[in-house]
Image (cartoon, rainbow, N blue to C red; front, top):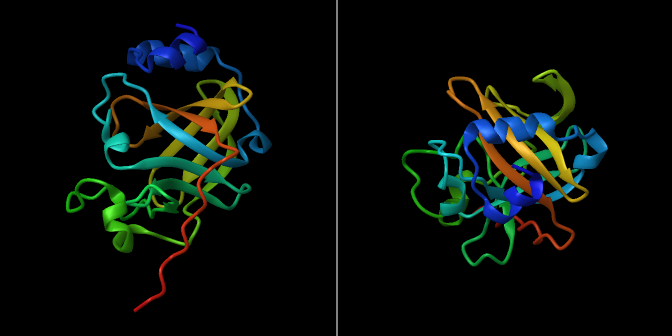
Length: 178
């Protein structure tokens, strides 16, 4: 499958996604800077649909040390806010993450961006601070990347697409403490 065909369908078998990932060009750290809107790829992975159903927006890379790995829409979808990956996903929080903002939001950056070798190629990789998880990126085109999540204990990688968003919603400010 080609990148353009994948963007039209949003579906791909896991092994075909991995083959496409291996064919795509690598990206450097500078390419990843900015705010990116995410979209899930349907591959038959157990996580398929989870992010979309909970109001996931995407990711933000300010520089190598300042990364918001999870951005979610507020309940009214008027803004986005960063979520602490240690607090979501959680079996006690169901539905749209915006409804649980007070419980999961963080002002801290919870990931870093580094160049790592994955499947024999050096490419930009987001490393979660608190999870044994890597999101490795390959270039789809000048404004999009294919992301591969590799997590300890996950039988197969989880795939997603990030599109650079020049008109990204503003980051919501945390409400003042009561």
